[in-house]
Length: 396
Ligand code: C5P
Image (cartoon, rainbow, N blue to C red; front, side, top):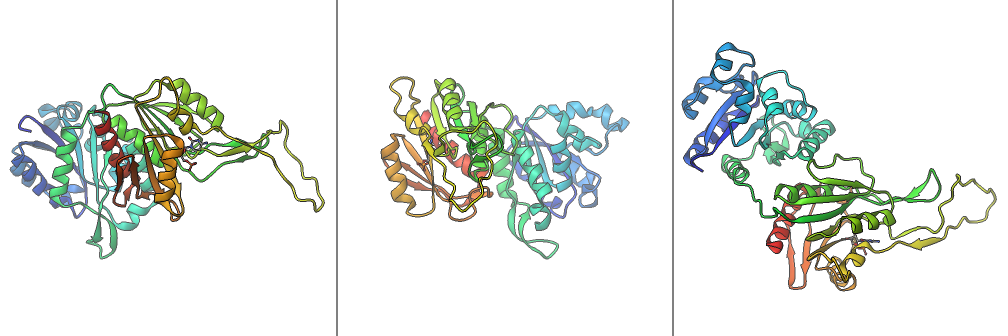
C-alpha cells in the first residue's frame, strides 16, 4: 500500500476524534491521508492535530487563497486513490446525495472522479430517519460505499445503530476499498429484480410486495467487481445502480423476452419475484361492478417460469444459473426441491415470514449441488456482497 493515498473528509460529530487514530493506523499500513475538515469538525478536532498526524497541510476552506494556492479543490478531490468520509454526518450525506456543493468538503465530493466511502455516525433516530435512508440508498446507487454503523450506547445516551465503527474496522474497509476486487472483469451477468405486474384491465393489476432492493444491491455488487451487468427490472420505486444496463419491464412475459434478448451471459441471477399467474385476458376497458350477490371470479393463465426456461436452454445457457426462493416455512426442503425442479445451479433461499420483503435486512442460505452455506443476518447490501463474492469465485 506504500504508494496509496486517501482524501479523508472529517465532518462534525463526537466520533471525529477516532479519525485521528485512523490517520495514524492508515499511515502504519503505508497509506497517506490528506485531510479536509468541515467547519463543524473543527469544533471536535483541530487542523493542527490533523497536520501533526498526517504530516500534511489540513484543508478547511473553499476559495481560501492559501488553500487554493497550495492545491485547488478540484485537484484535491482527484489526486487521491479513494475519498473516505469519516465520520460522515447526516448533513454531508444529504448534500452528496443531492449534488449540493457549498463548502470545500461537499465540493470535493461532487468534483471527485474517485470512489467514495462513507462511515456514518449519528444519533440512532437520525440514522433511522426516512430522509437519511433515502440519501444512503441514493449514494449506494451512485456507486459509493456506505458502511453500516455499529450498534451500541451513544454519546447522547441513546442505544442503537449509529456509532462510528471501531478504527480497526474502518482501516480494514478502507484498505479493501483501496485494492478493489475486479475478479468479474470481462464477465456479463444478467440479473432480474423487483416484482412483475400482471394487468387485469387498464387501471388494475396483480403484483407482489417485492421492493427490488436485494436484486438491485446484487447488481451493484457485481458491477463493483468489474462485471458488465444487465438488470432486467419490474416496476420499483428505488434508484437503479449507476453503471448497469437497465431494462425496464412490467409483466412476466416481457421479463422473459428481455432476459432472452440480453443473452449470452456468463451468469443469470433470477432475483425477481415473478408473478406465477396472470389474468387470462386483460380487459382493454375498465371492468365495471356488476352488482348483485354473485361471487366475482377471474381466470388465470400460468406465466412462464423464467428461471426454469433459462436453466434448461440447450443453447446459450449461462454457465451459472441462480434462483431465489422466498419461503415462509420448510425453507431447506423447498430450496432443495427447487434446485431439482428448475434445473438451476444454486438456490439462494430466505425465510420471508418476517420483514424481509420490502425490509432492509436479510439472511440467506445458499444451496448448491454440493451442500448448504448460511449467511449471517446483514443489510441487503452486505448480503449482496456475500453472494457476489461467491459468484466471483465460481466464475473464476
Ligand atoms: O417457484 P418460485 O416462484 O418460488 O421460484 C422462485 C425463483 O424462480 C426465483 O428465482 C424467481 O426469480 C424464479 N421465477 C421465475 N419465473 C416465474 C416464477 C419464479 O423466474 N414465473
